[in-house]
Image (cartoon, rainbow, N blue to C red; front, side, top):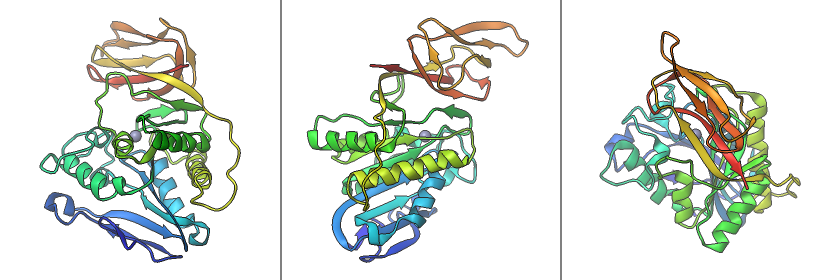
Length: 323
Ligand SMILES: [Zn+2]
């Protein structure tokens, strides 16, 4: 295989890196995206690693760049293709959540549309030209610039046993403590990994790090976790390290504020909370109480928004509910 959509692949036994674009769409072609291609001498699957669909989730972006320089073609079977920064318009703008081209969350617009917004067109081209042609896909995330989180992985069951079995094997090989098997409550669909799974790609998300930092341990967790996945699916030589299976969370409650104001958060990521437990308080800009935020469920605080400046309906935190 010579190319994966617009990405020219490395020759057998080689590494290639550079930039690609989607030339058929002038709005997209203003930008170029970094990529790495690592091709083994032995036949094998196409394994895609993406990051930076949220442009300030730096641990994922840096881990993908490190993997691109680290993986040895001599130890690879098949192809590994890495795109370390999907939200290219947002990176130097330090955009939180969204793409500055249209102020939309790029991880809510898949499968996209050929005649849609910038993000929808990007989603369409990326999914059809790149993602859907792969056997495996890992999308690396972190807490955003204003989010702290505990590391977790997530994948979606499709009903296709082969795809679901592969995704489960990947998620279990990463080495996270928590596995989320549900959609975030109250959120739009349209996530990249879910669209990939619907197209028959074994796909997952891994989350590590956050709050705009490039913390070494959080980057290393992604680098090691992805290498262990690559070994587990026999794309990378060597026996995978045995890691404890993650604990399963079957619901993912995302709490939003019914008020505009300042959030005095009373919990930390990783806290176990009871149903009805106060998680913090919203006050106005004179300190007048607006309302308590209570946990609707018993579970684990997986992420908190660390900025106290909250718009009405703004996201506050997420609680995962164990099996
Ligand atoms: Zn993200």
